[in-house]
Image (cartoon, rainbow, N blue to C red; front, top):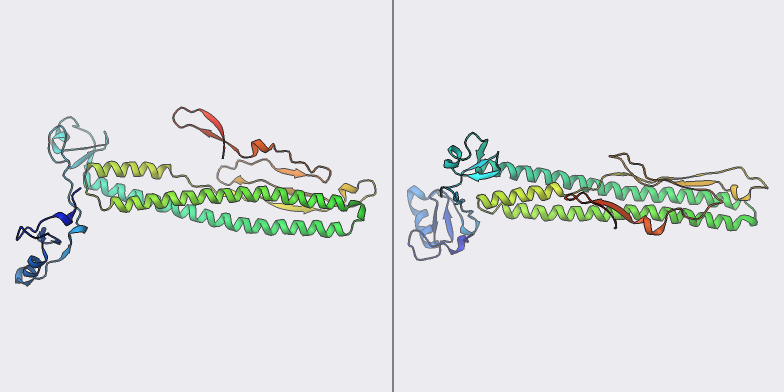
Length: 304
């Protein structure tokens, strides 16, 4: 696309046309602009920098070599007036500028909605981590207070239990951190698409712009937003002490894994008794996720 800065003044046809008269739709150099503003009939004309002028689209129909001014909604292509009465007869049409305007509005609205949703979700994630940390500390305190009442013979049991709580809570907290990291990536992608919208706003309205906007709409559609998960919970249940069951004196704790609030898919809960401190989950399977190819439908487990 030619830059307005290289236009020549259309009055003196010698100096660079650095100014554009909105009323006359002509390029002026600085001297010709001054003379133009001195005339009574044009003294109120408005000027803007030539670099800010977006030229009108001049796309031509490949079949009829006429200006493209319509969009065939049936075939999803830009067409000229001859196409409307010819090969695209009886199809559904809209004006090219109207289609561009609708796509711009749709893209901006959809991107704003997703960015706002991602921002809200990330705030909930951060607040959830703080709440979860408080609950974890409450459980640790309850376990510690209960343990101080037990004789020295079960001190080792108390230490192992606290270590298990912290270890499992750290696992859940790490999951939340990974979700926040993914959300930040979504926000970055949204910001890049927003910049693309801004760049396209300064592009001339032609078939190429229509195609760019359609691709941008596809990219926005592909932009994924991390859903809100039900944050893991943790609590402590005390039990009565007996001489024959030392390991059950302190009680049990439970840390539930995250689950999506949107699809209600409940993840496996991790419940540990005082007599069982080993993790059930296999380390190699903890960070593996199932992906499905949208083209071939093949499923594959991949490390995140």
